[in-house]
Amino acid sequence: MSKYNVEEQHLLEQLDNIADGLSQTLQPFCEVVVHHLKGEQQGIHRIYNNLSDRKEGDDITALGQVRIEDKNYPNIIANYANRLPNGKPLKSTSIGIKNKEGEYIAALCLNLDIAAFSIVQNMLAQFTAIHDLQPKESLQPLSQEELIHYIDQFSAKKGIPVRGLNSQERKQLMHELKNEGFLEIRRSIDLIAKHLGVSRPTIYSYLK
Image (tube, rainbow, N blue to C red; front, side):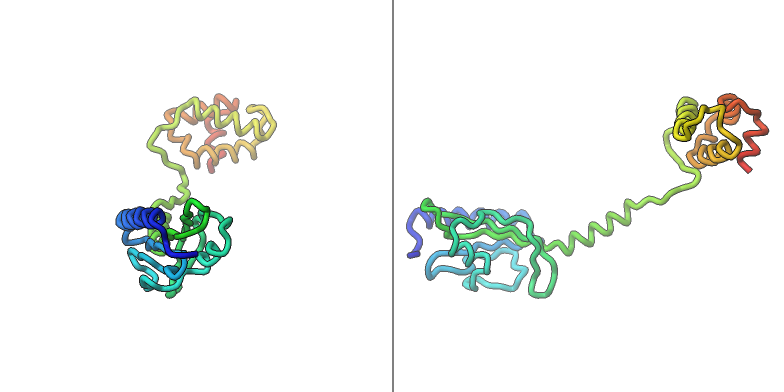
C-alpha cells in the first residue's frame, strides 16, 4: 500500500479526535492507542494515557499485522485479556478502521487497567457481605398470615396435613419458626397451638 490519500488523512484526523476524547473520559485507567497500518507509516501514531511505556513510532502489534495481511479479519475484537510489560492485567478492545476500498488503514485500541477495579470489587464484596443471623431479623414485622402460611408450607413439603405432624416434626417446625423470627409475632404461641391442634405447654416443650 502507498501513502495515505486525502480522504484517508481526513478519516485519520477524525480518529485522532475520537481517541483524544476517549482518553480524557477514561483517564487514568485506560490507555488509548491509534495505530497506522499503511505503508511506511505503519506503527503507533498516537498514544494517550500511556500505561505500556511505548512511544509514538513504535512497531504495530501482532493484531495490527494480521489486519494488514487479511482485510476480512473482524473489525472489532472486544474485551480480550492482555497484560502490561510489568504483568498487570488489562482488558483490551481493538477496532479496525478501513478505507472505502475495504483495506485496513488504522486501528483504535483501548487498554483498560483492571487491577484497580479488581481491588474495588473485592472491597465492595467485603463491604456488602452478610452473615446468617439466628434468629433472623427484619425491619418489616412478620404477620400472623405469614406465620400460618409458613406452617402450611412446612406440612405441604412433608406431604402431611398440619394436624398430622408428629412430635418430632412439630419440634423441627418450632425451631424453624424461632429462627425465622415468627415467635416475635404477638400471641404467636396461641396461634401456633391452635393451628396445630395442641396445647400451649406442648408448644413450649418443643422449644426446649
